[in-house]
Length: 236
Image (cartoon, rainbow, N blue to C red; front, top):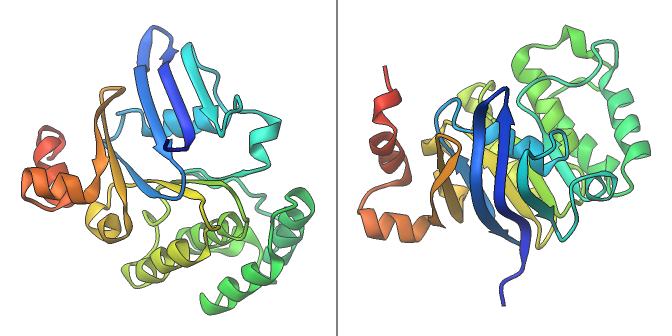
């Protein structure tokens, strides 16, 4: 019997009469890298926030390794939001110390190794960094945890192409054994090679969920080509 890290049953989120998610049934297995794919406004970030306990469902349920999102799940879910969340006045080494104090599964040695490979100064303040540098630091902090679930909302959207390859390798090589990585991104072509499964989300509902190999076989095209075809009405 397959074991799931995330189980959504009839999951619904309504904002002032408008559905961001509606009746979502979705089970994400353990030990996989899964792409959460869809256009802007499809419900990706809302789903991420519900999984991380930052929003409360309007209806239905979501469980993370058997628990309702809250203090318990925060101890084993590592979340990278799509916006900056660290204090501008902090230096990098202070952020690392903060994470080490706050999360029992945080590995400072791993954080410093990634920091040095990406040539980021540990004494640099957050406010002095470019957007790409900030995203790298936040990803380092998130991936330095030995979590059961990593939720990455647009982890490579703001970094230069030269750094994307390293960041994707970082994700592959640094997530804990048997953990699940959930990646939300528009850069399908960049992440396709590392994904085991893909969830297509549209208008607050799951359009399809399957292994990447199965999708390629059934539709006889790359995941990127399938995404472009499915959501071509959103293209300019």
